[in-house]
Each structure stands twice: as structure tokens, then as C-alpha cells.
Length: 417
Image (cartoon, rainbow, N blue to C red; front, side):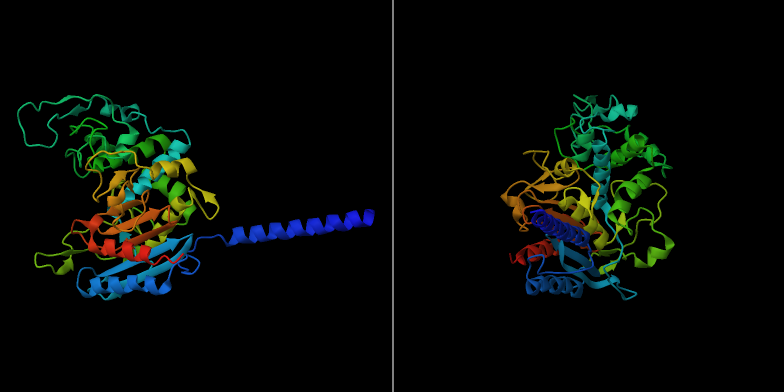
């Protein structure tokens, strides 16, 4: 009897050890590797995915872009990673997966994530008045005529309530796109944000969507105040380093500048030409609304963290609740929100709220963010997938650019199961 019990115990123990070993092995292999492609594991058709590369090449051949980097990920597996054309057309430097891009307003999602880290820690609240941390914003006035050219009856009036952190995140603060001119160049983010307090609101807080760069600069300053660290240092320590985003920065080291994609524009004749002005890769003051530089694979690590509800490679960066807050439509049926049809506003992200917003084959609830220099990313929780496309052109309309639309549609059309 004792022998049978002993043998049963040994068999049970062996089975338990085997099960534990298999669980640990699975966990150990659950490391996101953007450079490793596996379309089958992603449930996608490799032949259909090949259309993406072919389509992007047509845009390069037509002179609409020097080159592209793009990635499609589903179920945590990279279905496709493409580098097409050139990162520098004149020097004939080929585009590569580790080419570095200026991502402009996609930076706002990093800033929003930084705020949500602090919300998770109880150091700031979404409904907190901004004036609680920046007293200079107390008593800010509103132009009742908004941005119209009217002159009668437009004397500034009091705001009906203070601007909140949530207002800044959703671009409903009433703040203008840019703050008033100040002592240029500003010597610090604090100095720039202080100048912003002299703005006149174009709408009462919470009543209108106005895309505000100064609003996100304020959020960057709130990160400094509530964390006790400089904005860029906080994001590096709390976001980029835990996620393994080794090429994401606001100041590009000399050793990496050869990997920075050249910036182009379409001239009056529709010819692709080098942009007359390019942002300084080492600015004195960081731009929380648009100053980050990164690679398509680094950005994929950020998006995979969001798809994982706040974790990557076993490290939790944001709570599940924080990610849900970032990717939820907070603006309801407010009109004129975002730069694409059918979207509401999450925390930095546009969120598909109705059928009109699915024109790129994105599901209702998908979230996205674009940048002025033609970078764009989206995540689709329904399909458990995301995609990122990067190229560098200054001409406006990037949020509904043909190149972006084609990439997104072709990626979704390649789903096999």
C-alpha cells in the first residue's frame, strides 16, 4: 500500500514538474522579437502580405516617397516587416528596419503613457485641475468668438470651469494649437509652459475639440512636476528602457545620426525634394507633443505593450485600466474630432467609434495615431493586431494619405484565420 502511494506520489510529482517546465518554457519563449517574422503564427497569408511591399514600391517608383519601413503584427507574432526604397534618396542609402524616423505627433502617445504611469501611482488624476500643479493657469480667459475673425462681442470671459488633465489629453481644453509667442528660444520646458498660460482659450473647457500642441507641452511639464524628474529622463527610465526601445530618443547621439531618414517634401510641381528645414536632432528643449525619434521596430514594442494591456516580455509598464483609458473614446459624439472620419478621441489616440471609421478595415474600437512627417500606427483589439508605417514627407494630410490607407487595408486583407 505504501509502495503504491509512493509511486502515485512520484508520478504526480513528475507530471507536475513536467507541466511546470512546459509552462516556464512557454513563458520563456513569449518574448516579442520584432525582427523575427512568422506569418503562419500570426494567422496571415504570406502571399497576400507580399502585396504590401509591392504597393509601397509603386509609391517609391512614382516619387511620392523616398522609402518606407512598415510592420504588421498579429497575436504577438510579426507577420511582415518591410524596408522599401531609401532612407536617403540622394546618397542612395537603403531603407532598413533600424532606420530612425522623426515621428512628430506620435510622440503624444509616449507623453500620454507617461501621464498614465503617474495616474497608476496616484501622483496625478485625470480630473485634476491643471492649475493645481501650475497656478499660472488659474483664471485663464476664454474668447467667446473662438477663432473667428469677429471683433464685436469678443471680449474675453471667465472659463466655466478649470482645465483638467483629461481635457489636455483629449484636446478639449480650449487651448489654441500653439501658445502665445514668448522669449524664443525657450530655455526650458517650464519656461515654454509658463508662456502658454498667457493664452486665451478658443472654447470653454470640454466643449470643443481643438488640436493643441501647447496642451501636450503642458502634460510634459506635469510629468516633470509630479515625478520630480526631467520629462525625457522619466520617459527613458519608465517607458523606453523597460520596453527595450533602445533607439527611441529626443536627442540623437552622433553615432546614430547616419541612420536618421532624410526629410522630403513635394514641391509645387509635385516633385520629391529635400525639405528646406528639418528639426534639430538635438534640441535644447524637448517637445512632448512632437519631438521623439524612433524606429519601426521600437515603435512596435510600444504598440505590443498596449495590445498586451500594459506588459511586454514579462514587465508591466501600465495597468490594464490605464491602457483601457488610453484606448477608449472619451469625446462621445462631439463633432469635428480627429483628422479622419468616424473617430472619437482617446488619450492621445483617435478611436474608431462608428462604421464610417472602418474605411481602412479597422474595427470599431481600433485606436490610431499619426505624425506630421508621415508616420502612422494603429492597434485593433478585435483582430488582435497592429501595424506601423513610417516614411518622411512634410506635406499635410498624412492621417488619410493614400500610402497609409493602402498599407492598412492590405494588412487587414491578409488575415487568413
